[in-house]
Image (tube, rainbow, N blue to C red):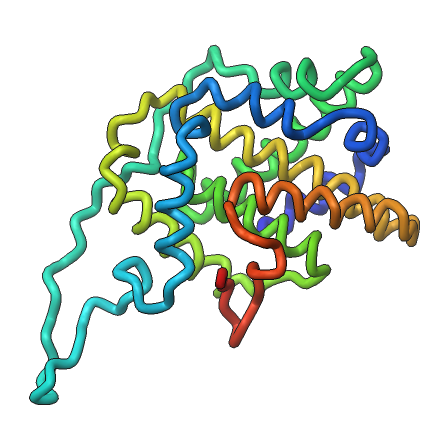
Length: 247
């Protein structure tokens, strides 16, 4: 996983549970749906449908066997990089999150801190993996975070890498993604990082303090966001045979 995000967030003294309890994440999500990518449920459904089936083109090895038993080599995949975007300095996700979720100056400052810490850790590790400025990385980070918080079980690094590859290929198979503005891609990616930070802050707080209420809140938040963003029941998002699967 993006382990550094958890390390950095453990130093944030945050009662994210109060923020979650006092606000509606549906309101926050709606504020981001002005971006074309987040507003189009069809696009997310297309991505998720490609990651659910082990036999999809996104997860195939590139070679099949014909009825005669001979191997049929498929042509190399065309790399379109539909998930990659150029950052726009005018996108201020920390402020957007704070304004959408925070009711008081203290809450707004806390939300900005959680987002900034998560984003810094995420950017560092994404760059090290060669995944910088790519929605596939944001979706992978969000998925891994949500399933870790919900199931209290963290996938292996190999499982994370394999899932990223599937998502990255899936994005390239959806022509609509190639038409999206960089700003829209960046806004959606940042939203995923922000959501992940809020889940992690609540989860880590519960773990460190052995607070069952905080852990229950984190699980509830993860369940809602899995349904909202990944369009699936949280029970369908699992680790099986060392792989991240969605049924």
